[in-house]
Image (cartoon, rainbow, N blue to C red):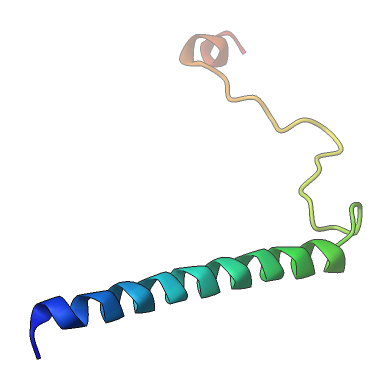
Length: 62
């Protein structure tokens, strides 16, 4: 079997796998967004802002 005959089959297989992965990714994103509505703890929310890192000069003044 020559390489010129197997090339279209390889390209077709590659395209089919890319389309399948894309469809699966979109479906998975849809399922996860429906399963976790906003405000159920899926997001990271800070009640107070995170602590600020002091510079060496500010640390020396304290």
